[in-house]
Image (cartoon, rainbow, N blue to C red; front, side, top):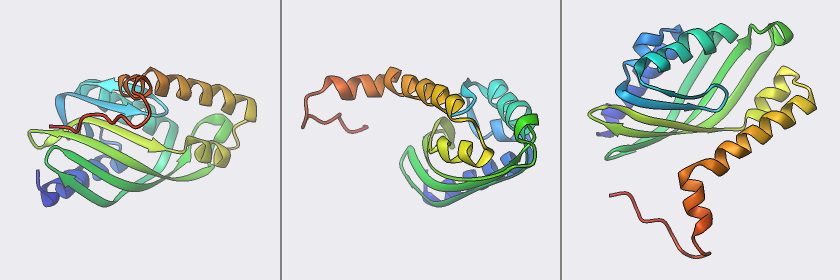
Amino acid sequence: MTNDEFRTLLDRLQAAAEAGDGEAFAACFTPDGVYHDYIYGDHKGRAEIAHMMRDLFHGDATDYRWEMIDAICVGDLGYAWSLSSFASTRAEFAGRRVVIDGMSRFELRDGLIADYRESVNGGVAMAQLGVAPERMAKVFDKWAGWLKDRPETKDYLARPKGARAKPRA
């Protein structure tokens, strides 16, 4: 995929996310695509991805904005820095505005997203919402478990210092 094609795909993805159009959002993914969300967990396939965006995210937030910046694509791998913001609709945080930045990683296949991962400091979001420290600690423990359980992390920890993973083909 070229950088221009990747940028076009990201424009579609962002517009669908901001509109809460789960089906249009999911159409940016391959039929077996996976969206790894740091709040809502993993969602596989277009139906689950559409549900996550439409019902979970837009069920908890309003006035959502998402902008991918400095996007770059090399072959079947793309990255972008992003800024996003929303106002919470959850009762305990209603109306509180959050802004976060993150890095997104896209594995691409046939012009679509096959696997999406993001690295976001969710603690920054929770602090803006006013989440109690004890609750934050529980969430951080869960996220640490997810990171430690990933096959890539296990492979990394199993290699001796100085040994590197094989580059993607």
